Image (cartoon, rainbow, N blue to C red; front, side, top):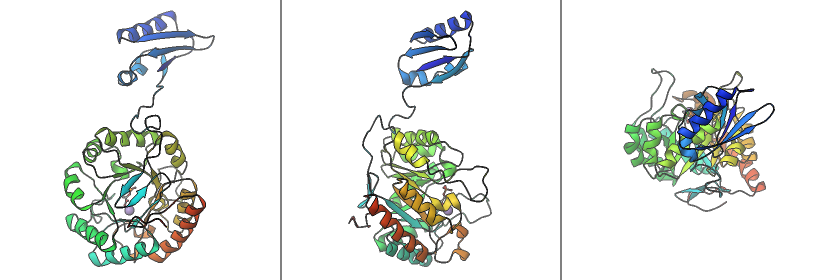
Amino acid sequence: MIIVLKPHPTPDVVQHVLERIEALGLTPHLSQGVARTIIGVIGDEEKLQVQPLQAIPGVEQVVPILKPFKLASREFHAEDTVIEVKGVRIGGGHLAMIAGPCAIESEAILMEIAAGVKAAGANILRGGAFKPRTSPYSFQGLGEEGLRILRAAGDTYGMPVITEVMDPRQVDLVERYTDLFQVGARNMQNFDLLKEVGRTRTPVLLKRGMSATVKDLLMSAEYILAEGNREVILCERGIRTFEDSTRNTMDLSAVPVAQGLSHLPIIADPSHATGKPDLIPAMARAAVAAGSDGVHIEVHSCPEKALSDGPQALLPEQYARLMEDLRQLAELMGKSIDVCEGVSV
Ligand code: PEP
Ligand code: MN
């Protein structure tokens, strides 16, 4: 750890900082330049991270040398993590193609959508049974009945399924029906939820919070990993900015940034990032070109009747056209897209 002092510190300030560090049982190494004074601190970096060193008067910046996320970091695990769910691999050159409606609305509608996305080449079926809606008066999801329908559709079409879990108290119930948990943007820092899914051995898709940095996202992943669940997939789904021509701003650079910092797979969700069907194919292609480990897209057979996020849903035929492009791009990039039974195409 390196402590940078404010410019031209008085000898008293320097002495005070040195004493504080020594009082913590650590060894300071003082380096006084013309313009800057810095102090290198040798000691247990983990112990140091919980000390409010930044609050010592005269300290400008505290720079950790080790990353605050450990299990999620590339230093800890150099190889890409590959997660396998019912024969579908995600990460390390294998792309997850997650598709389905925002919310599960009825068995008939979900079966129709599942048939469409499976035929197009999606390898994981999505659908929300518990929906985090901005308004309490909007459709909140079918709950357990929705989970049952999702499982039935996944089993019918031989697809692993993913659904959102919003509350630590729902984890057991949701786990009985799903192959992957989704932790949504609004819950990225629901630490009790992260710990609870971390205690399971079901893979977790962790979506980036709308005002979270990539490092915040990795710290949240660390909560899950620290509980013993090593199967975390990150997801860039757009962040809030001043730009209002899209629902959110898709931060595609987050994909290579996260891949540099972490071994965990990262996928992209152009549906929630753009909110506009016209923009989704371009951003999905861009995401694959940028190296993302998959794409998460909302598809509905009748978007105008959808109970949630209809305006951003692609029709199954639009999704099928996009998948043709994505398959070509994947091939160009030497990546594979597993089909549900684990056969590579
Ligand atoms: C969703 O996937 O339907 C969803 C609510 O996503 P997010 O958490 O990214 O808003
Ligand atoms: Mn949605």
